[in-house]
Length: 83
Image (cartoon, rainbow, N blue to C red):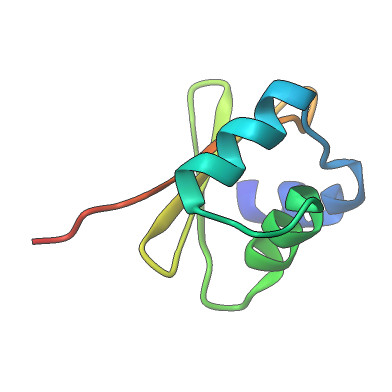
């Protein structure tokens, strides 16, 4: 159910200037449209989406994207080290 709520509001996803810089650095992205990048990842059928507390966590391609569940702000994204 939480996944469907996020997916039905995916057009509301946004981030801050600091968020853009943080996500680009953490994921080593060479794009200025990090919102589109994250949105595409969230919409991928292989994305594991769950809600914990006030945030959604979207796990795909060894990365986790954290999204505030009230404002739909992409807070951060980072690579996950799997050993």
